[in-house]
Image 1 (cartoon, rainbow, N blue to C red):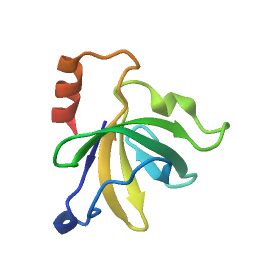
Image 2: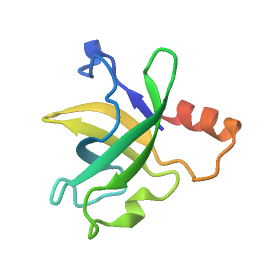
Image 3: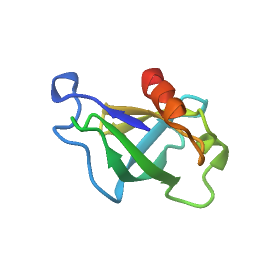
Length: 106
C-alpha cells in the first residue's frame, strides 16, 4: 500500500499508473543509499482521491535483497532528491481490516 504525498508536500500531482519504476528507500536497509534498489510498482487500486494506491511491487533486479519485501516492511519512493510517497508491504492475503490498519501506518 502506498500513500502519495501531495504536490504541496513535494509529491506528485497524480499517482503513476502501471509499470512505474523508481528508487525505493526501505526502512530496514541499513546500507542505503549504497546500493539503492529500484522498485517496480504496478498500481492495481486507487482510492477515490488518488492519494492511496494498492500495487503489486517487485524489486527490478533478481539479486536485490528480497527480504526487504517482507510483509510489514516500510519504504519511501524517491524521485531525484525528494520522497514522493511512503508505503508498507502488505501480505499477499489480506482482509479489509488489515488494509485499513496499514493505511493508518503510512
